[in-house]
Length: 359
Image (cartoon, rainbow, N blue to C red; front, top):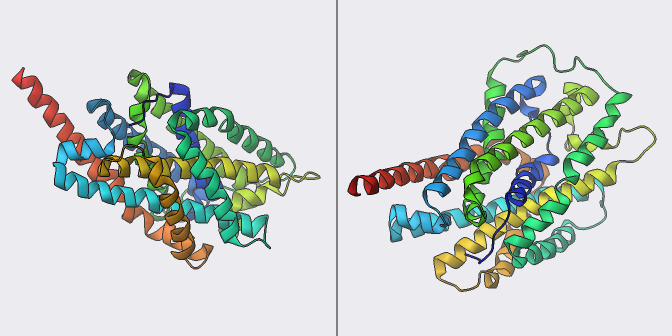
């Protein structure tokens, strides 16, 4: 671990920026159509339980990161193997966000610029941020993340002139199945992805406030998702939500007389940048602990380069990426986000009870 600490506010903003991340360009609740708000509420509740689970794991294993907890609870051999899979998961997550970011900017803002150039330039800033350490990442979040809700609110002002406040009615018009499917998608993307923070929570300077911080961050993100959903459906109505690729971006260009598109680009860069940086940081910290390296920075450039290549190679186009994310990502993520953390919590509770009995 770095010899560094972050404050409760820095962790709160870092986690909020991470959870918003690339969800800022993809309308939350789209698959559930007009009932997306129900899916957001259900996933927000499940996300709160999941992130509380991650917090309890860290509180039961103080000052230990994910790799150390895995080795301690599963044994050195099995724990190391599971840690390798987690490193892959963090890298894969970073590559998907890289592709989201590149596809969005090429489609909306820089159609004549090769996606490879956009992602590569963005990757350079990610390398710098990750190598600067967790304290710098925390300070960056303090400066940048507050702009996300502020700018989102400004963009939402377009409902003053273009609106249909009944667009989300009637409730459950298409049944409960689409709501359940979208709830699972939202639970695993983005709430469950906060498993990345098992490598970051140990840096909190006062862990007594960890559960409070994570709860407030999850609630804020859920409220922002609800706001974004209602803003989008009120402006565009449900049939347009299904047709548009980047729904939140579309609402930003409908403000009468003013081009708010640059504001949305800023939101995307902040959220996507923080999410990728956290995922890369988790990967390189875990890899350095797994290999016994003294400085995690020797891995950063290689891991980022691999993530960039993976982001360009793994999917042919944005529609294939969205299809894979919507239909496969949730099931692919469950072992990393739910099954293994739940086993870790049980093992941690069992060891704690065993130690108390011995005393």
